[in-house]
Amino acid sequence: MNIITFDIEEWFAYIDQGRFKEYDLYLDTILNKLDEQQQKGTFFCVGEMGRLFPDVIRKIHSRGHEVGCHSNIHTWLNKMTEAECREDTLRAVDSLEQCIGEKIKSYRAPAFSIGESNKWAFEVLAENGIERDASVFPASRDFGGFPNFGQEEPCIVEYNGIRIKEFPICTAKLLGKEVAYSGGGYFRFFPLSFIMREMKRTQYSMGYFHIGDLLPDTIGVLSKEEYEAYFKEPGTFKARYLRYLKTNLGKRNALKKLMRLMSSVSFFNLEQADSMIEWKQSPVVKI
Ligand SMILES: [Zn+2]
Image (cartoon, rainbow, N blue to C red; front, side, top):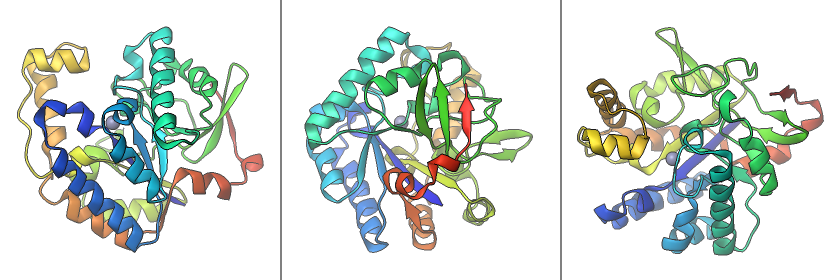
């Protein structure tokens, strides 16, 4: 089962750049391609988009796709206290539900930022009516992640008496490190043939894309101040340069590559996948 998801935040995250028409165009290209392939995606949207750009969210919803939640303002969950996360999730879910008039049931944390150190986030999600999560990175990584998760397929996460259906991100080994090959910067980096081979090798895959990953122009190295304001960690030269490389690698062909992938693979969204899975037989991961 191959799942396709998009994280929708650019209109809000880069509001001062005013490139809304360009983002709209990329979104339309994706929506048209999904129609052509008769496929549905899950679009994880930041809550503030529901307040500031409701037409974008309503367009996604009216074309028959699932609207999920991607936090309120794209703050990484590992940089929030539990109380802040509770407030953030409440605001985000409320905004999106008011925008589309339907319950939001799926969630993805920005940058897969739920890990061992903030697993209380699952409680916060459950309190807000979230039934499906796609935030787990089931390996160790620079920050967060679940090194001992032990599942690379949909499963049930159990924490403190609550249960959530989990759709973890898929990883592949690159230079001894587990990387999320099926989206983001890694999708641009790996040849399409490698990505398709990996997707076919496993029974489950999860594609994840941001509009920003598909834009062809390069983004400069962030200043120390910009980096620290956004990532809330020391903006060393190395950190800023690595971020620059990750943001810009393989940008020229990214949209074309995505269109080719969507033409050759049958994708489903989380809502469809949820109804196709025999959850009674799925593994339960106690965290
Ligand atoms: Zn995002």
